[in-house]
Image (cartoon, rainbow, N blue to C red):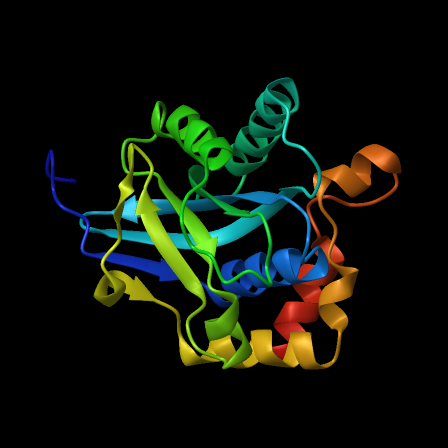
Length: 201
């Protein structure tokens, strides 16, 4: 049983979660990109199992609310169950900026209301280009407080898979909910892209 108030010492990205996060942001390098992190907590460790890419346009509150409801319903039927444990945001992949902007702060506050240990993640484009860990974390309830770099775990397999997806341009086939809203036939859960990641990994 998880101890009350136990400090989180580790945030681990699965290959799928890291690869999809970077792929989504890379596909829309000059847009406002947002997505949700699904995972679970075990004591002092949080594991990000999957991500759901949401938007690459303006993030409107009503749309975010609907998206969260859909993602929550999806997480509940997974085995084991997954919950929304964070979000990622990028305003410009090429800028190299990693500070949390106002729109991401507002979103993280809403997510933190239902998940006390939620985090918000920004992309470090320069690090991604060098095939280094390209995420910087901030605590959702306190977005001015960053996650210690030593607590971020991205396996070598995730870095290698992501590098391959980027170099072969296969990342361009990832979808988000914006795409689904424009064409209902597009799969916002990215089942096909998940298979691509599994093949590359």
